[in-house]
Image (cartoon, rainbow, N blue to C red; front, side, top):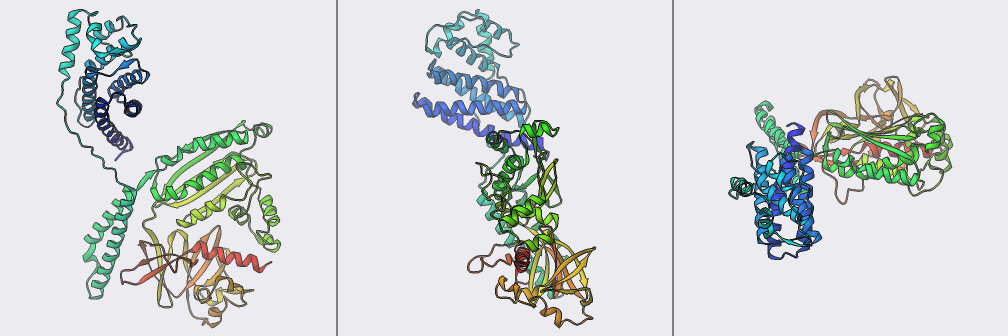
Length: 593
């Protein structure tokens, strides 16, 4: 379905709901004409409907909605009194409005000028109403009607006003209204509004169905049947799964459009001139991911203005426009959505970041000397770190960017920083398009199955003992010309607590027992610009899994992010690569202290 058709369906659903609300409100108001709540609600609904119709190019709906809105504006100000005659006209106008909305789906000619003209005559008598857009000779005569000096009029005065028009013209108006007579129909919307919690529950059930499907296929395969016999079952469950996931997708523009005000407020506080430019607002992403990342994006937009964009004086002195630019972009590649926050400001000086981190004791002097530029830049996401020279309403407290890191990691995402002094910075968030299903690499460790999310997996390689070397308390090897740390997962999981990683020879035990001829399966994982080789007992397969979060009493274990159930009925724990690598490199920093 094209975007234009999708917008049309959304408008139709909202317009039909608005028309139904008007019917109910007219009924309530007719019982109590002093019901201010109903009057305000009708005015708001007609105003919104008019604006939406104009935006979509439905001029007839916009014109009729505009006249109805003006009628209730006069009612609100007390210039027009509601009576039986006016209610008849309003019900008639709402019926015609319903016909116009229905004509969007099934194109047909709907006559609406008569009731529109009648309402305009009533308005003309209430105040000097200027008729806009008219080619009807009848309307031309209406403009010449005398305006009543009465502060409040009854709509029954329509006959008195009409007396000033020739009899033939009045007859023509009445005939046109009669031709518009329609039978009131009950129209049901083609769109159903469903609470997100119901979609979440449905997706959980679909996840359970997939697990049961895998279990059935695994059991029948053990009995000698071919897995291909279940191809149709596999296709149906996959279609059902992705169909439910598709319903949960929303356009990122839903969130992006809220940042104009946020950026404006920060720019005022900082006394800076900044424009926000949105790109890729039509890209779709899981609603739960939008909800998880919304606060993080607020922090990053605020930081782009506060830390990135210079004052107008500094920009002018460096040959830049006084008005800075912040770009908020979205793009997708396969199952990943990339959100970029870019500014054309001063850029990030990694030497300053390193100095600030040392001052705050976030890193040791020894560790700082061996850190790469990318590793230094990632320090801005550490708790308590701030690059601001002074504390303001917006920055300087050392909170915010660590929230971005935690939120991104919680959904299996990554953060990349690109920056150049004097030209600006770009933060790239790599996020899964859906949290419901994720690709994973299954492996065995001590006869137990585990999974590593593919979003953290760089490659799978084979190494021998001769390819791995001891360095202090760890092991290293080379991958594509880069020196990487190598960890035997067996050694890590045999430790009671992560703080025992500092024990001498913690990661040498399996290596020392290794036969030189054995070929090792190594999974290369990456996080925060760091790569590590994880040695596993046996690689199994790559598959999509439905991950469930861990509950008490195991939800506090840092090394696992969740679990899934495999086709054979076994529970498979999912490794939390961000937590594992975070602990390893934190210990490395402490060892160098």
